[in-house]
Amino acid sequence: MPDPADIDSFDDLRGAFDQGLPIDPHRRWMWLALEEARMAAEEDEVPVGAIVVAAGRVVASAHNQREQLADPTAHAEMIALTQAAAALGSWRLEGCTLYVTLEPCPMCAGAILQARVPTVVWGAADPKAGAVASLYRLFEDQRLNHRVTHVGGIMADECGRILSDFFRGKRG
Image 1 (cartoon, rainbow, N blue to C red):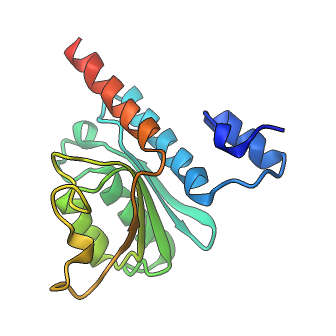
Image 2 (image 1 turned 30 degrees about the horizontal axis):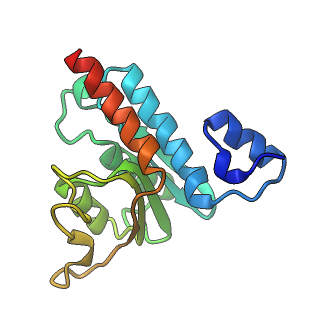
């Protein structure tokens, strides 16, 4: 029986799940967000993926679509929040957790705050635009009327690698 820490692919995750192995829920959901990021890369979009989980099930999943939609706001998080609100019938996503492969930018962090998402789990840090821990700490700003609990660095290597590979391919 493989060690759950040795899960290196979505197929490994599915196999471990089928075998009843204990799987860290953050890793489980982040793998699904990474699948979305892979879809973005296949569509020549910056590979960022996001999912929204409510009551133990995925209610939204999305990836960046800025190029396809010619929309500067079409970040994975923005699309996933919109899908989740539609699926749940409310803009208040109070019982949800957002999983995203890259630390949210200021726009996405603002939308997360507005949607009242209580928890965000993110993968790779974004030293150039991160608004959760890297450049700004919007989720902890006492001047705002809502706080967001956040956990960063979940599968950071995998989340960072897909971005690095994508941009390396663009430069190469």
